[in-house]
Length: 88
Image 1 (cartoon, rainbow, N blue to C red):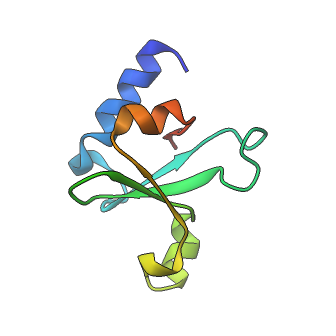
Image 2: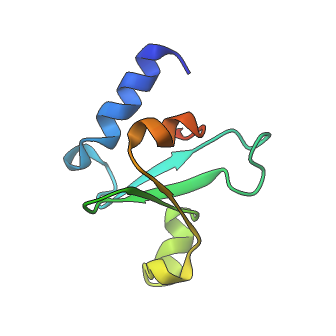
Image 3: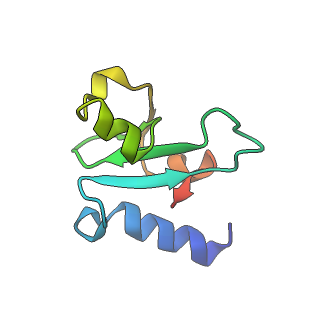
């Protein structure tokens, strides 16, 4: 990811009002490096960033129940991006 792309991703992550599927933001990472954990959703809430390891369609099918989905936690957008995630 270039520096420009990183800044664009940080801006989008930090602007939930701009998320097309608010309160969720679909994200992805390289499926070759992360074959089983390559798609996720960020949920708009205060505090650390939680990545729900599901796609939007599957998440809807379980009634948006966050307790039923594996999640990863990141302190901030920089940590999220450093782990290979980017806005989808």
